[in-house]
Image 1: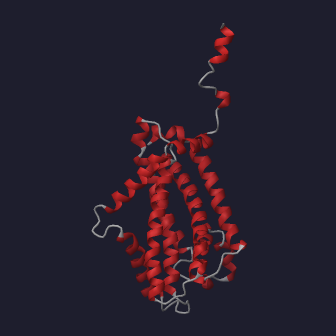
Image 2 (image 1 turned 120 degrees about the vertical axis):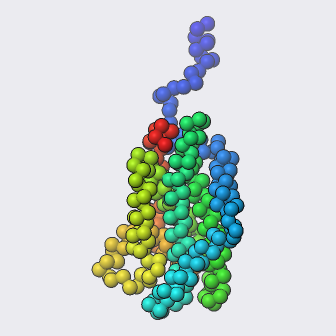
Image 3 (image 1 turned 180 degrees about the vertical axis):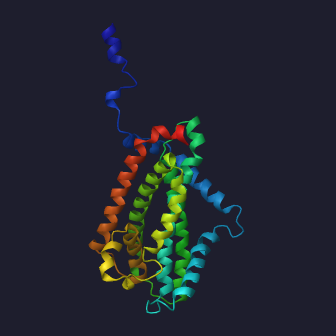
Length: 278
């Protein structure tokens, strides 16, 4: 009788069968996909519902920055053909990275009260930040298209490669955002320090200035900057009309995948502590 009960009533919990935090987090995300959609929806509505310009602000923001930079630097870099398109492509890629990583940190802090009350996949806040930033990026392509038409810059078929550029940038941004979120939970000053790092990082990436002005002896150091590769990969099919080659894709793919995996493992390894530290 005892043997029959043992055979038919398997234990619900078995520590020997536990999967890693990283894999269980992936499984939990599938079950909470509806909540993920609602978080992205909430972020978008919250961002625009009190804005007079609404969604148009997402399109005007990079456009306004581009106009200022073009006015200031167009004469300095006048050899750069279609400079406004050059700057705007860089700004759009950079804004996606900057906004998403900031939002990932803020989202985890905001979700702290929820995590103390109910179980949620911890990564859901970082992924929702990426989803919101992705919507903003797609909307930002509208003013980019307008600038191309107004300046009579060529419109290339190589735009079809843009999703590939965005995919690797998305992977890197999510992984980096998860790393930052973990550090911010333990060291709150990371949020303030990151803003300083971002300012320096922006000017160390060829966004405002062309890569051609960088002295050759420093070019190797510039290529150690991951955003150099992501901005270049985003810009090539849009402004240059060039299908990214294997040598263009490989560094971005390596940075994107390695940082995503490292960020995911780092974040999920500490996820049980977040509810008590936020």
